Image (cartoon, rainbow, N blue to C red; front, side, top):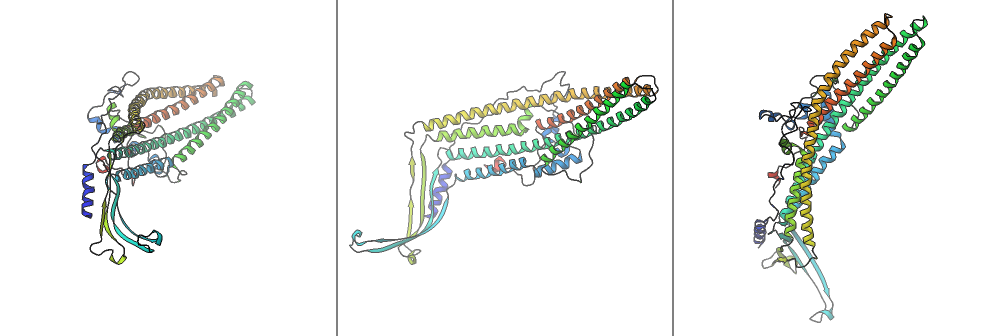
Length: 488
């Protein structure tokens, strides 16, 4: 009989899962087939050639994209220590366990049980008129209230949990890409702040030298009091710039420390400058359809949509009968010594069926909730695509325009340097006033500051482009999300 019960449960599982969930169809892509083109974009957004598809951002791991060895080490530390990313990883483990719990409902839960009962009956309640004490012993296997999933309710709930798990796994991928890009951006901000500080210190030193020279010229009557006062003003202004740049560098370092989750290690590879060639790898844009297959937040939204689709199946199944099975097989005896003797077999089999007749509209409302939730998920999925398209388009435009701005700014710094050198020479030779040299020096300082800012913007934009194109997710030790085939 035990074999019969197990066989019955197995057949019940085989007969289950006539899914009532709608057939899933991916919503139509709500954006253009190509990224924007025009003067603002240059050739950056032109459709990629077939060969170019082999080097899309999603195919480039961050180790390959971020060529700076110091930055690579900081990213490695962040992926181990960052608390937000740790939470995202643990959320995947939690979702996996929740899926396994839901999946277990597809199978009967078989338990072994053994029990004893003793009872005493007084004489006035006994059919024989005499009091007596009796008992029984039992041992066996059984399963309780196993649902025969003829209409796919349990299967739909399992599919919903599976898609929710996949959605969480994609959220972890997005979290990693975001963390990597944030560390890179903050590192670049720190480099820029340090370069701004060095520039301010060099400028202060130059202003101080000019002030000393002007003081000597004033002492011999070669400079006016106004020139001396202006020189002193410039020194004081430069001192303020040094203090401001020092603060910005400290805050940038604090932001980086927060991201990596520990103080900056003493032993790190040497830092490079923002103008170093090959600090980051340039990227092909690909085409918008690549985002649907590669970008984690879009994949996350689609898995959420699939989960909502599966939930409709569970809600529909609520309108149909629910069949449950309860059974047991074992032995029973009034004496413990006779429990396992021949002839003491005991078994029970109790199927039941529940048919909804009146529920005050509960099942209808549940289906309406599931259907509306699916429509919401569609809108959120389409919005995620549109947002991704906009982010990539903005980054492509910025990449092209920033390149042009940097070229112009480098030419400006070169011309301002020539102007400053000539003005200083004329001042020291007594040909021109100090005010002309001062104006040239101030303009050069501003041009060099702006060049650092533009270089930071260009590199930060490249990091952003890497992120919005899907980045290159790299699994860490122990992070091996189930594939759809293995998980189902």
